[in-house]
Figure 1 (spheres, rainbow, N blue to C red):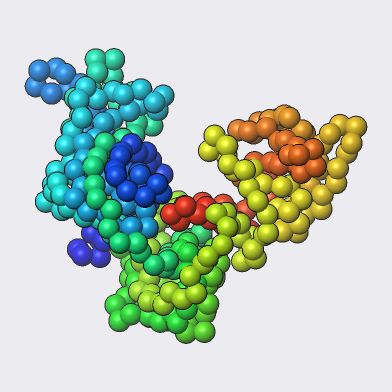
Figure 2: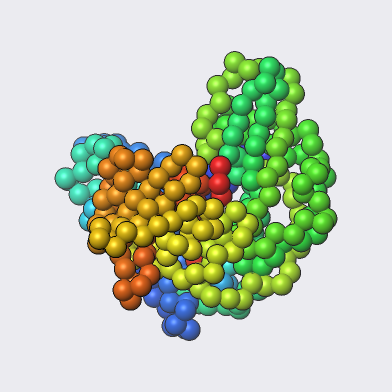
Length: 377
């Protein structure tokens, strides 16, 4: 049960981190004004005994700064996906694990707390809560600064059966700010768990040839590792690999803290020396630097003010000042327009280029640093 509980926390943390939003204040250094983010998961709509609309969900707080945060006092409001406040009044964040005045270490996340929000009358069903998120208002005291550390996590990219053997293909990624070295396996066994916890499979291996003391993973670097579990009932449906949870008993050291620019782009374990523009949540990068890192061919057409990128059987064509582009002769729409920066550098939304060439894209915010990892499938 402990393994299931730990994995549940891990999965829920991954889910809610994408929903983080915040509001707060404090007296302290300028880079520590807003260290606390909040997230909510498992939101359920219902009516109370008086027929008033209520939303219930699990709420978390996370310290996203590189400082310890003490003496936290927080209240939470609920907002819809349009950014409109839909809770009638804020709810105090009070539970056994994070009582008012408690602390969070850098990167730490509180236990999930069940909260009920009285809703405005316009919210009348579960559909109205789609995309809902929370904002905290809080006070706190800043503590000491944390040293940069490596943050190594496994991710399943494929899961399938061969007879009664369950196969897993994974990537082991360092999302941290320091280099991870001296890998070794702890005594306990790793496991894979289904999202509804209906099945939990122990990994028989307590070692892997690709994960050993000689492995070195810098920030944004990864290693591939496959695992096999024998004697598994192949009639058990396999969910989407992104929904499977995995725990590996890995231990490693953090060395050579990463001190560099505020933006790091890694493509297939190689650092791409380039700058980025982040606007309205969209990351733009120079098309030439990204294309060359992916091993693609690139050409510029002056009359049409367009760039064509070709790799394998995929062709991507983008136009200056347009959010329309062609992917293999099919017209597509981008969330942001391609543009010329300083009349010389063709900037494009990073994600559409990476995904056009069948790459996985991972974003990680490490304190003030933005880490983007692109991995070819």
